[in-house]
Amino acid sequence: MGEVVLKMEEMESIRLKDYLGMDQREAADHMKVSQPTFHRILTEARKKIGCALVSGKAIRIHGGMYEMATTPLCKFQCYDCQHVWEVVHGTGRPQKCPECKSMNIHRAEDDRGYARAGHGRHGMR
Image (cartoon, rainbow, N blue to C red):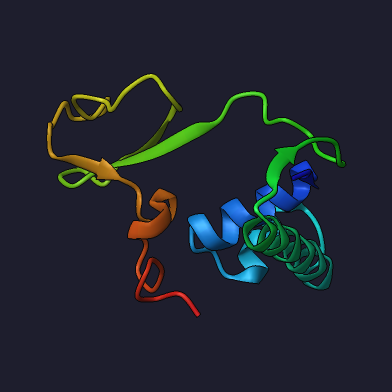
């Protein structure tokens, strides 16, 4: 059967573009590469994934050029006082705003992935 090897940067391009729904410019900025370079990485990743699906091969994610983020953060905003703050990803949703103590909080608009305006299943181009 065999396997297809997907590099870490190829996996990240799929995550940013296809899973989170970012446009290519935004995703390229996130990966700190040019938009044409991001496009090449994404195209190669999609080709490899397509090959694996059609041929029934396993996908192994290995190697490539990448740098792990030291502390991933999630951004929240208070509906009442508009205060914006970040918390370490995986520590749970804050219960109240650290400024005004309101419980009327939500993920910040620029930190919502699929929930961002113009993105998501029906907004992707």
